[in-house]
Amino acid sequence: MVTPDHAIDWRAPHETDVAQTLGPLRRGPGDPAFGVGPDGAVWRTTLTDAGAATLRVRQLGRDRVRVEAWGPGAEAAIALAPSMLGERDDTSGFAPGLPLLAEAHRRHPGLRVPRTARVMEALVPAVLEQKVISLQAHAAWRRLLLRFGSAAPGPTPRPMRVVPSASGWRAIPSWEWHRAGVDPRRAATVQRVAVYAERIEEAAGLSPAEATSRLTHFAGIGVWTAAEVAQRAFGDPDAVSVGDYHVSNYVGHALYGRDMTDDEMLVALEPWAGQRYRVIRLLMAAGVPGRPRRGPRMSFVDHRSR
Image (tube, rainbow, N blue to C red; front, side, top):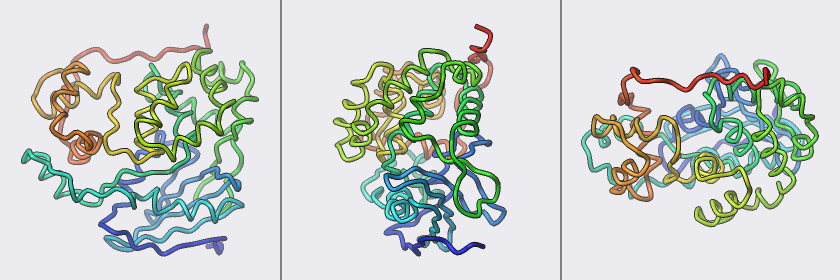
């Protein structure tokens, strides 16, 4: 193993499960910016203000984590690592209420909400996931990173890529978005927000309400996209993806055995105000079944043929 440029042996203030906590940062099984090594260590690339970095995150104990980093942004990435691993995510005030949730919380005490503080890294893939199936969005993310991302520093277990800079996203020509299966509306949204990347990155230091307001100020960024960003970049345990094709029905069936509209879902989750995203994560982690797969699914839309 190549000696890292920076490293930290971190003891969390609470039990922390690396795989469960960092799992939502992965954009599909072929994500070029995220991987799992043969030893179970999580590898993740990031673009800090100081430059690119590759992180290797290894579980040492229930509350002990080893983080190693390579690249010009290694020191900055190490400084953000505890936050990314849920250092600020205190569940001591969480009251499950239902036996189902209490059991899920008991079985998954190390599940934390990550806070990467890298907003564009969460925003771009969220935009790509708007109104399309995950398979299609993940394929677009993979193609764009392989084509326009930079090679990841360090001894990665497989070739990995670092996301483009804001100027890199702006420079992608229209035909490359087309080849990646991204329609002009989503491509234009990414390139539009990339112009204001500095202002967007500032949202990581705002309150959840202020951050959501900052993001949704931009055309093409709605409450669903803002929530997806908040769940990853801001460490918000209350961010619910309102408008998601599946989430409302999942919550409805997991808790009450029926379909729900977004409004009904929000009413159902009201007892856990402040912790609503955590409730959904716990239900999913515990394998609580949602809606039976008997209804119509979203179809694959091939924008390349248009």
